[in-house]
Image 1: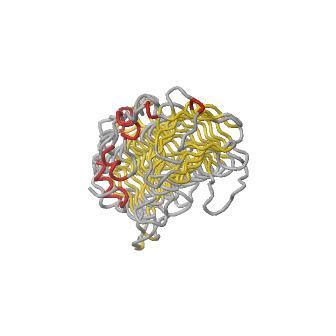
Image 2: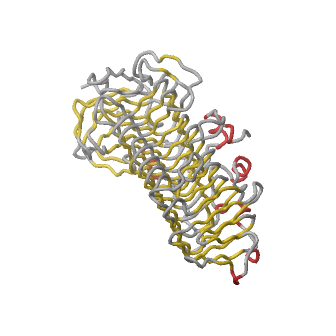
Image 3: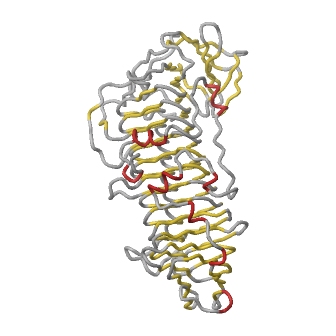
Length: 533
C-alpha cells in the first residue's frame, strides 16, 4: 500500500481506508439514527486497544508513531521535582541527562523522565540527540513562563508527552516572547521534533502569544483529555497531524486543528482516526494543506469561518458536525494540477467555473453541516457513495447548500441538502442513485417538517429544517428513478441529524416531484426547478 506520506490521490487514500470504520450504507433516511461512532472515553486505555479505520500498523509505517513507545520500564524513570528556585532530580543527586539552571530544566538524552511540581516562571527544554526518543511523564505539573514558551523540544528524534493517569497538568506561556526570531518557539507546547501526546491524564494549554500546541515535524494525538486556548492556532502539526484517541477541546482565534506543510510533496495531511475533537475557531476549524480525512471518531467544529478545508477532503466513517460563517466543507487551496471550465449550471455543475484538482469524497459516516456560506463546496469534483450527508445551507441566494465546480456524483448513501433556491447544484449525470429536487414556493421557517411520500402514501423521507429553507435536494436508495413523489410540509417526524421517520397526520400537500428530473438553477434570485404545483 502506498505510504500516507505521499498521498496526493484522494481515491488511493479512500482505497487504503478500506471504507472501514463506522460507515452506514444509507439505504433509507431512517438509517441515520443507526449510526454509531462513539469514541472511547479519554484515558480508557491505550490507543492500541481502540478500533481504528486506519490500522496502527499502517500509521507506524507512515508516521513516527509506535504504540511500543507508550510502554517502558518504570525502574528506568528519572524523577524530577519542579519548584521555584529549587528544582531537583530524585534523591537530591544530579543526572548527566538533566541540567537545572535556575528555573530552567534541560533534558539532554534519551530516556523516561517523570515531572511533578510547578514553576511559576520557568521552562522545560528538551535538547537531546537527533536519534533520541525522549519520554516525559507529566504527573501533576504546572509550568508558566513570563518570557516565552514553558515547554520546548529543541532537538530529539521523537518527544512523547505522557499524561499520567489521574493527573492534572498545565502549560501557560507569555503574551509576549523575548525571542521572536524566525525559528524561535511560538507555542506554549512547542516541538521541533516529532511529537506524540498520550496517557489518560489531563492537560490544559494556554497559548497566550500565538499557538497552543505546535510541532514543526509530525504530530500524533494518541490519548489524553486536553484543553487548548490559543491566541492564534490551537493545535498544529506540520508534516501531518493525527488524532487517534482522547478528548481534545480547542478554542482558537485562528485555525483550530491543522497540518500546514505546503512545501514538501505528500506532506501537510491530517487524519482523524478515533477519539473526539471539538473546535471553536476564529478562522478555519479543521484544516490540511493536502488531504483531510475523517475515518473514525467524532469531529465537531462548533464555530468557524470555514469548517473543514483542504485540497482533498475524505469522510469515510465517524461523525463530523460542522458550523461555519462561510463554507462548511471547502475543497480548495493547495496546488491546482488540472483545470477545465464547467459548462452550464445544475446537474452537478457550479457553473462556468474552473474545475481544479480538488475533491470531496464521502464514503461512510455521518457529516452534518450548518453553514452561512456554501454548505459542501468543491472547487473540483465531489462524490458521495455511502454514509449520510446533511446540509443546512445558506439562506441567501448568493450561496448554495451544494457548490461543485465540476460534477457531483452520487452513487450511494443518503444526501439531504437544504438552503436557498438561488444557487442549486444537483447530482450529475454519472450518478447511479436517483434523487429529487424540491423548490418551495417561498422559504419555510426553521423547524418545518418536509416529507416525501411515494405513490402509495408511504413516507420515504422526513427532514426537519434548522433555518429558513427554500430548496431541498434529497437522494437515497429509497428513491426510485422516474417515480413521482408527493411533497408535504408539516406533520410530525422523529429525526436524528434532521433526518428520520415521519407521519403525514396534519401535513399539507405542496405538490409533486419526479425522481431524477433536476432543473438547472438560475443564479442568484432566479430560483430552481422542483415540485409541479
